[in-house]
Amino acid sequence: MILDVERLEVRYGRLPAVRDISINVAAGEIVCVVGPNGAGKSTTMLAIAGELTPSRGRLLFEGGPLAGRSSEDTARLGISLVPEGRRIFGTLTVEENLRVASYIRRDRDAAAKDLESLLDRFPILKERFRSPAGRLSGGEQQILAIARGMLTRPKLMLVDEPSLGLAPKNVDLVYELLRSLREAGMTLLIVEQNLDRVMDVADRVYVMRDGRVQLSGTVVALKGSAELEAAYFGFDRGAA
Amino acid sequence: MITLLQNFIDAVSLGSLYALTALGVGLLFGVLRLINFAHANFITIGAYAIIVPSTNAIATLYIGAWHWAVMSTAVVVIVVALAVVTEFIVFRPLRRADPPTLLVASFALAYALQYITLLIYDGRPKAVDIGSNLAEQVMVGELRIPKLEILTIAVTLALIVSLALFLKRTRYGIQIRAAAEDFRMARLLGVRANTVIAVAFALSGVLAAAVSLLFLARTGMLAPRMGLPLVLIAFVATVIGGMGSLVGAAVGGFVVGFASVVLQVVLPVEIRQFRDAFVYLLVIAILLWRPAGLIQVRAITERV
Ligand SMILES: Nc1ncnc2c1ncn2[C@@H]1O[C@H](COP(=O)(O)OP(=O)(O)OP(=O)(O)O)[C@@H](O)[C@H]1O
Ligand SMILES: [Mg+2]
Image 1 (tube, rainbow over the protein chains, first blue to last red):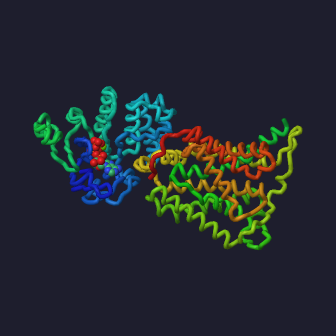
Image 2 (cartoon, each protein chain N blue to C red; image 1 turned 90 degrees about the vertical axis):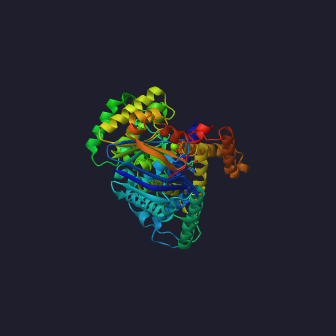
Image 3 (cartoon, chains in turn brown, red; image 1 turned 90 degrees about the horizontal axis):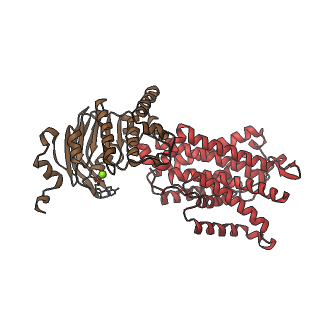
């Protein structure tokens, strides 16, 4: 396993947002986390990336503990978070956004090559290379955010709701990119609300609710199952 | 016409000092959301550096007696070291503190540094003679321009251009700008918070050192609180320029410089001594007109 999350608990002040989460991801997998608003998905991602400190549980990356590592360090270890809301640097140019990410790399030549191939792949980034990233459309910003995350050359990418607020056409584009990342050997942990998308792209799924894992399994086993629907929407849905 | 031009040059040179100070303050505000009162002490200590180690009532120059290039370099090194050391001792341990705590810390630091200066040098101003040849005037047609004003404007331009290039072109510059916008995101991409902050402090030290020397050459007087009025005006400049924008800070500095000179000229003699009160009135007017400052930036977000 490249990532092991064991019985994680994360609090904001005294309020637990993640109560008891165990997730694991094997190298080369695409694992999706689904769940309603407030389930604790983003919190889990932030804790893995080192921005939030867990109050309980263990985080292992490639078998080594992540406890006490800052986000600066986890980035160096090979974890890259593309956070909810994209958080591109709007006043920086597209180029500068990408540069910020490549500074942690020692292999300058390879980084330059990666940048080249990204720009070839996404002509829009090339076209707008020198203009402020804040002027890109939402979809373009999402592409930039993922491209930026990739340029740190992570072993594991955490992507939080990449399709949020995007037009369907752009969602296709984003998922095409994510799939191609897997083909290139990347491991992905993706938070996604859209179940159809998840079934389309993931190897395995975790359903989260109220800070706990309700259900997990392979896509093959869960596809179209009533169990999945129940876990996702909660058991109270049938009653309502 | 000649007097008008003369006044214009005065205004640009005074505005230059304010702009440099405002940039030093604005840089740290941008990165850390820190309002650094101790910037005044950076300026003061940079000026006193030229008489170290003498503590006599009548100042004798030591560093100040060196060749100007060596002296300037020495003062820059001293102030940068001071800025970086204060970041290390005072602000680094407070990395997770909220802005009000940082504000109080910078107050405390400013007082501590001021009293250290007072302890060593007592409160009496000391006349010092640096760059007295800068008082000479250059004649351009009928226009008389003091060399010091030309130097002030030239140094300011050079520093502003260098700072802009640094922020735009270098690795640390780009990291500073990214961190100023979203520090946590920058860290998620592996940007080292401590490095970026130390570099920002060092840059503000360079700017403070330049102000130390230019201001000292202008007044010819060392005083333990000499940096304070400059920094107060710089705060005003950053506010009217728009908090969080470096362009705004520089523009604000020049605006205040112009306002001061204009008021100096147009106010009747009897109330001229209250000039600064009118400057602040003007500031209030500007803020009523544009509450977010002249240069509007995105909403200021949380740091680190
Ligand atoms: N900064 C914060 N401070 C306090 N509470 C927070 C903070 N961020 C999130 N929470 C709370 O923690 C819980 C989990 O939030 P989280 O953002 O992890 O959910 P999520 O599953 O990502 O939801 P969404 O689908 O809406 O993005 C929620 O109840 C939320 O209100
Ligand atoms: Mg979320």
